[in-house]
Length: 262
Image (cartoon, rainbow, N blue to C red; front, top):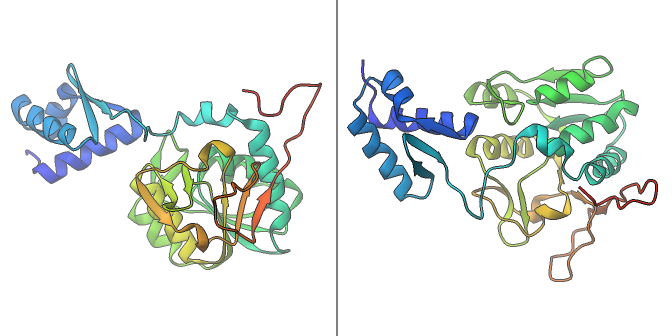
């Protein structure tokens, strides 16, 4: 049975989100429609700038709003800064707090810093964070559809389960932090989850290393002034609004090498 166009577009988006590319051959197999129809679908999506056509299929569009690199690579990128941000963020959390945490490489580094805070209750969609803290903390892992590159769970099931909880603090790591646009993510499902966590929490925290400051991505999560804390290793730019919760983390410098290298 062949798919309707809206269903085909959803399938194409899911494949691009998970793998970064999609082929016409596999779409013919999985949708039941002709190559000519699928070529027309891809051309229409390419015209919107959402994808880029290549021989035999399509890939995620390149440009100023590239999707984040693979999770494994991101885990090693600016690791000293992420660990410093994680330590500073962990120190801000109230004793015995219930904390919602989204999936990401910076929040995974933050989870490492929570080893000394077993008093905290963690609610997360991150497989990495759940594994990190399951033996030492009260952890709730939200259900949903796995996203390999993000090491997280997403979708209507995730959002539905999340809405059953309230938290003292929501901690997210957006793709972009900009004084005008606010906090933003590349993927709609990630932005929706981060926004839902903010709605469910009494206080809101964003973790962002310096490269994310001034960057704008595709989907807005919340305005900058919605934050109670912004934790980063960078000082506040002079043309940014004053945030009482701006927290500047200090990366460790070892063996005479720069903490900002790599």
